[in-house]
Every structure is written in C-alpha cells, then in structure tokens.
Image (cartoon, rainbow, N blue to C red):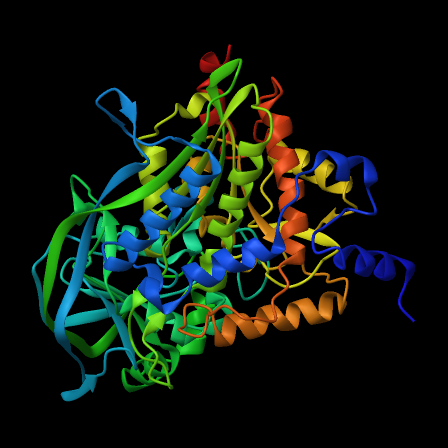
Amino acid sequence: MRSALSRLLAASLLTGSIGLALQPAYAAKAPDISAQRLSSIVRTLSSDAFEGRGPATAGETKTVNYIVSQMKAMGLQPGGEMKGGKRTWTQPVPLLRANITGSPQLSLNVGGKSQALTQGEQVAIRAALDGSKSVSIDNAPLVFLGYGVKAPERNWDDFKGMDLHGKIGVVLINDPDFETGQGDFGGKAMTYYGRWTYKYEEAARQGLAGLLIVHETDPASYGWNTVKNSNTNTMFDVVRDNPKGSHPPMEGWMQRDVAVDLFKQSGLDFDALKKQAQTRDFKPVELKGATLSAKYAVDSQVITSQNVVGRLAGTKRPDETVIYSGHWDHLGIGQPDAKGDRIYNGAVDNATGIASLLELGRAFAKAPRTERSVVFLAVTAEEKGLLGSEYYASKPLYPLGKTVGVINMDALDPHGLSKNFTTSGSAQVELLDDLTATAKKWGLTYSPDPHPEAGHFFRSDHFPFAKRGVPAISYGSGNDWVEGGVAAAEASDKAYTAERYHQPADQWEASWTFKGMARDLQMLYTLGRDLANSKQWPNWGQDSEFRAARDATAADRR
C-alpha cells in the first residue's frame, strides 16, 4: 500500500504540472513549470541535428541560435557584450583550440624493449595546449611523482626539489588521503589538489616535458571510457599570455594495468609505491631503464566561442545581479562507441541544465520585474575545463562585487520526484542556507554531496565564481526518490555514470517524466526571486577559503 504522501504526490502528477499540493501557500506563488516543455527542450538540444553541441562547430552555431531565439520569444532582454551602445545576446569567448593531426606515435621502452601504445586504449593523450604545433619526445625518462601535489600550507611536497626538466611524470589521480579517508586533504572529500587540472598546472610549474595520470575508476569517479572520450578529441583552453606556464608539452592519462606492468618491468611495486605516496615523506622514484617517446602534430589555433546571456533589468537596483547559469556545450562528434555512434548528444549533461535555465527565464519574464536584475547565463566549454564560466568570471559583464549569487544547474535528474536535493560539494556558504530554507517550504531536505570524493565542487561552472568570492552553488537533484528511495536513485546514478556519462548513449528518453525537475525549478525560482527582491548579500562561512575574496569587494556593496 502506498503512503499518504505517495498518493498525494501521484494525484498532483495527474494534473500535468506540479501543483505543490503539499504546500498550497507556495503553490499560489510559484510559477507553472512545464515538465512537457522541459522534455521538449532536452529532446531538441540533444538530437543528432545539434551534433553534440561541440564548441566552434556547426553544432555550436545551431545551439546558440536556438537559445537566443528561445530567450527572445519569452521576453528576455539581451545581456551580453556592448556593441554600438546596446547589449547583444552573446559574450565572445576566445579559446585556444587544439587537435592532434593523425594518429600519435607513442611507445614505452623498458630495459631496451620497445612497446607501442595505442591512443584511446592504453593511454589517452591530449592535444597540446601550450601553443605547440608539434610534440616530439625521444626516450624521456619516467619518474613516479606520487599524487603530483605541492601544498606548502599542508607541509606537503611530492617533488622534493628534484630537477624534472625533460622528464615525464607519472602521478595518481585524486588526493593522498582518498584511500584511507583520513589525512590533510579533506578525507574522502576531494580538494582542488586532486583534480587533473591542478596536476597538469603543477607539472608545468615543475618543468616536466609531460605528465601521465594513472586512471583508476574509484578515485576518478568515472571509468576509462569517460577518460578516452573526454581527452582524445578536440581540446580547448582560455587564451593565456603564457600557456607554457599552465601546460606541459604533453598531457595524458594511462590505464592502471599499463602502469602496474610498467612499474613491474622497472623492478617496482605499484601498490607499495601508492601507499608510500600517501605520506608526506614520499620522494620521487625514477623508473629505471624506462623511457617514453611521443611524436604527433598539433593543429592549434585561436577561435571564438560564445556565452549566451539573457537579462531582466531590476526596477530599483539594476546594478545588483542574481545569476542563473548552465553550460550549453557537450563533446560534439568523437570516437565511435560499440554501436558506431559518434555523436555525444549530452541529454542529461547538460541539455537538462539549459532547459532549466530557459524555463526559469520564461517564468521570470511572465512575472512582475524584480528589484535587482536577473541574468540567465548559458556558458560554453564547460566540458573542456569550465572555460566559458572562467572567462565570464575573469571578464564579468556585470561586476562580481555586486553579484548577489550564482545558482548553477548541471546534469539534473529527468526522472520523477525526490524527497531531497544536494549540491556539488558542501562548502559553507550562506546561499546554501537560503536554498535549504526555501526547499523546506516544499518539503525538501538538504543532503550533503553524497560523493565528495568525486570533486564535483571543482567540476561545475559555479567554481570560477566561487574562487573569486561570489557566493555560488551548483544544484543537484536528490538521491531519495519518492518511488524507489535511495536505492533506486543510486542505482540509476551508477548506471548513468557507467553507461552514459560522456558517451554517445547520453540521449533523451521518452520515459523521462521531468516531474522532479519541474518541482525543483519552482523552488529555485522562488530562491532567486526572493534574493532579487531583497537587500541581502550572502557570504561564505567564516572558515571558508573564499570568504576573504568576497570581503575584499565589500565596498562595492555599500
């Protein structure tokens, strides 16, 4: 027998929209969010016609035009860069685009024996982002560098002053305390030192000729298919004054079994060295007699992608801004899967976020204007390292000091209703307190990030804002479904990660109800509207590493 709660929720679903039967007072205030329209937008954006929405492709042109047309039709105003004294719909984002030309020639040499490496199988080598037009490495020595971390504030240095110029580093993914759950790096929760982006940046600072990250599914939080599909296609980066300061000539990943065998042939025990690397006494270990050679050409050029920006100006304090954000891009056309499908449709990741952004824009456009301005920001190149949001945060169209907060939406659950919600990471921020309080009015409870070891806080578009002090959260769908509970939700999430995430199979499904998303968006609308009609300025917690950056702009908010 179903509970009274289940029966009441089921009755509300029969109306075709979320009627909020449990909270009639808020049902009257919240907009009608259409689950059917959410489904239609996701289906359109993730169709083969959009070619996987890769930046700087025909798929981008079609995607940008679609988002702009939707924003125009619903009554939003252009919120992008200024031209001729008027706002446009976009913010141009210059990016360095790089492709490996042909098949890279890759090989290991151990004890005089050469072993060819196949791109996408044993290794996944990224196109060079240091500006090089070619990479030519001839028998470079290999050295194991633990987790590749240099963190003075934690008294941690995996490099110990070793001269690494001309060498190839081999490092582990995640943080030194991931395995034990205890230590100086947040226990199971990943710090930025665990992210692959940091490891490549540190490799460049150390003067390495290249860096190979050993892939393991649990500490990475995804399988090899995700690594292969994300790193063997077109690479992008923001245009840097000194790209060699952020990228070594060669960047890539290595399968764990390849690393284990490589260490064994060099007379080393991979698992034993992994344990040593979890201590601050670890010292670099040369793989004696082991070298790597790599040769490939790189087609590298600067292109321009687009952030899409809609806006509704505030009636009293238009210079103060609440931002909703989501990334429009996915992986485009890449390596074929077992069925020969090469289009990475990106239905959940992140057509759901853009559908949410557009539905929120529609709701705000229909309602009376708020006192503060509301911006709807669809960013590019998230899949290439949060590049669109990084560019906006570094060159904001609206001052960060007067940005009230950022509510980001990335890969929301298109299934039914849940009893809770989460966020990417569980940072101390008053904006999360506001979200939690608002959600309670819908009977939703907050559950901290169930997988902090995956480092989601550093993997969504709120992070470039957060590190500059702007209160920012990335909303996550709940993991306690009304129908099926935690077990069903976790099973669905695991299946998605293994079978669909960053794979061509991330496609729209007719069985998706979008009822949970519709209900969640009513709540997120209320959160943003309350902020946009208030004089509140959320901040980070007293112990947050982002508090000082926010406090530094306090004069802007007087």
